[in-house]
Image (cartoon, rainbow, N blue to C red; front, side, top):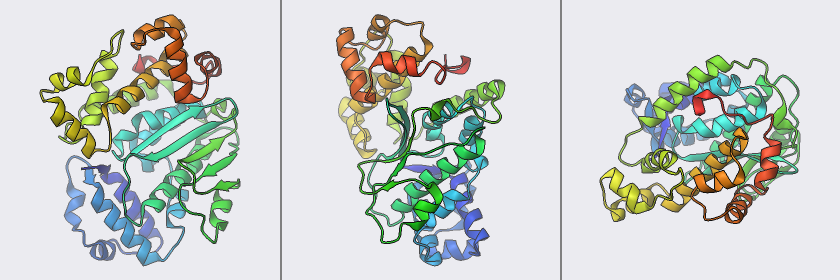
Length: 344
């Protein structure tokens, strides 16, 4: 089962109420009971959210519903993730934190920040394909939301090079052009906001390192307590962050730590649309970025810490992950990605 924070559903209700749709009428159209809002864990099965969103799109008849809902969002709509972003020093750090903590908001999306030689991409990807009609609008909401939010918290104007959309090109693209004011590329393999390479260094209006540390402590505590039986990908990630320190833990090791057989663990991951190999690669990638940004580790040190056999193997893997060499990433991250004490 995939989930989404009930705060996101409340945000949907706030937007639909603003444009004249009664919440009770919307729930009735979606065949969803209001009692779902009383979940004490602040989590909602994803199918309920999609049902309400499908109903909202149908009731409004708005072909750009997702773009318009995202355009109306502000920092608070992303709960603690939005406040973490606003407390960062610059755009790059804000997007990096968004990817790190988005699991608080929901389990279906994999969002991450990739700095390359000629661009910086904020990639917005579904971990699993869903057949619902509203999926295109969900992605549009995310792209529009994050773009407008980063513009509102940045001290200087934020230029954008391109927007990548996975969906087919619609006959009318006017709203995409109005909102993003840049070329829109459809039928791409991934959805992304593509920025010029200098955008990560743009400072934010109200950086607050002390508040950021407190918010991250709370966010990390929240993520560590995710304990549903079908969120094993996150459990494994947490384990691997602690175990990949000069070691190369196997799925057998992790299954033993979780008290289950490898076969059962693989089945759980398959239900979530994930594999052990993908999770381990993602953890190594995040650790590599952190070690490179800290600058106290040499390439040889990082090779050992991540469990690679030799530096050349690590260099090839890192370039495959990010499109650039470890050395280039280290130099480009000098003023952008410096982990604070909360992440050390």
